[in-house]
Image (cartoon, rainbow, N blue to C red; front, side):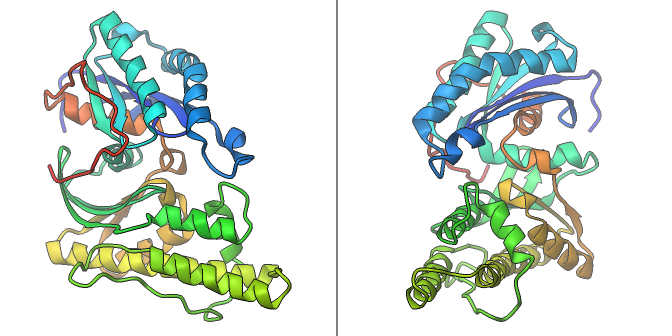
Length: 346
């Protein structure tokens, strides 16, 4: 997409436990991306505590903002628009970022743009893959969302698949916790699976009747938890590391099968030869490698973001904001945070 002048977007992301602010040029080129992670703070609780998360956003956001401008070697006067996540997410966390963006907009007279967090994840692929343009199929896999989307244009989406219960990443975290992995458990489960042996266990691949592209993980989660509990009951509440690895591998393979089959089938049905994965779970190498292999078999181009852009980050929000801004879409100051904001066709 050609533009006559460079456009700089300040992106603010605070939907959960990471305070992240970025400056992105023309929707693709990251000039700075500063993120303050709270993982170590929440680790002792086994998960994110909303009140603690929002409090730490308040503490950190001004420093993160100043460093983002400094790293980009610009001042706020160089910014064309301020993009900020307004949902979905933790309401207190969202309000910190949104209030900061509104205050900045009022003080500088720079327009601001509310961004759906899920649209931000899709845009993360534009940063790593500067040649990627719609249309393509987007597989969104995160702690809160599992969606299969036809990205028709930068601002136009049609959702073909969504989860009916647990999200993919949520299932990972819950099984990891039952297996005894410390928070965040998903990456540790992935690592454990590397030492697993195939076909020791057989877990279900959830399907929903008359919804070929929708996902379900509650049945898989319940089945795996029951298997773990039965093993522990027979072994004085113990489970050895080899068995943990075997369970991790089969659980992960079940997830992989459910994601790949639906994604490849939709690509073929719509005759679109580009697939992009995004969201926190897209950092999982086993999922990426399996999907890459299937794409090669079917002559489909495969895209994925760098790992640093798979988790929540300001750069993806700035990228999404750029495509809203050049489409002349901005937000009013009465925009409110929406913890349960839906990701819908548009």
